[in-house]
Amino acid sequence: EDQVTQSPEALRLQEGESSSLNCSYTVSGLRGLFWYRQDPGKGPEFLFTLYSAGEEKEKERLKATLTKKESFLHITAPKPEDSATYLCAVHTNTGGFKTIFGAGTRLFVKA
Amino acid sequence: ETGVTQSPTHLIKTRGQQVTLRCSSQSGHNTVSWYQQALGQGPQFIFQYYREEENGRGNFPPRFSGLQFPNYSSELNVNALELDDSALYLCASSRQFSYEQYFGPGTRLTVT
Image 1 (cartoon, helix red, strand yellow):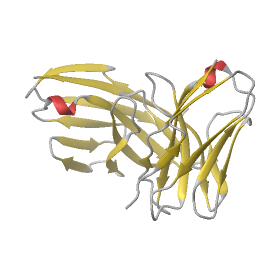
Image 2 (spheres, chains in turn green, yellow; image 1 turned 45 degrees about the vertical axis):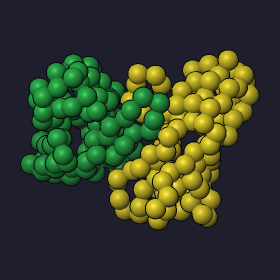
Image 3 (tube, rainbow over the protein chains, first blue to last red; image 1 turned 90 degrees about the vertical axis):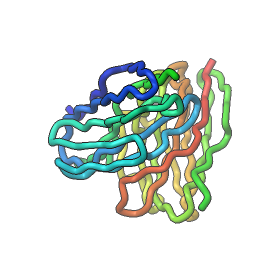
Image 4 (cartoon, chains in turn red, brown; image 1 turned 135 degrees about the vertical axis):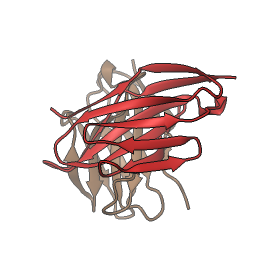
């Protein structure tokens, strides 16, 4: 069965304390892995797309990496404004288009 | 470039009623997907429309149905509302052949 698991469920960091969020997946016919940021009461905001193992993408303090079984979102020297829920999703086109999201990691960054 | 918009923002319905939610795609996007997000959970894929036809569906019953119009706007219809249908409903649009989806702000549906 296709599934996406994110860990940890919640992460509390001090400002400047770097860390990583994990997204492990089991899916047939992977068409891409995506990271989103979601603030409370708002729709997810697109961050990165990764298509193949070994690929890396960076944006400001965030860096996403992909292997054949998991993806990591590395946060370097986070700031309080990085506090949000980070969602991982995979797209598959096997048997029709389908998107599977993980439950997310809630990140809290304290000043 | 105009982003994805959804209406209404909030809605309260009674169990057994029907509801229609609306979405306008981002400029230049011709594919739209709908998601249900319960509190504290990730979005659950309902279905996707491309060229006015459904081309993918998640594990939702037939009482969840949709439409896409020639201008790429879309509707989500839910019949016979149940209490568990209370959630944030998200619409996302993307360009043809792209899997990068851009989300609207959502419609908060409460079923009492």
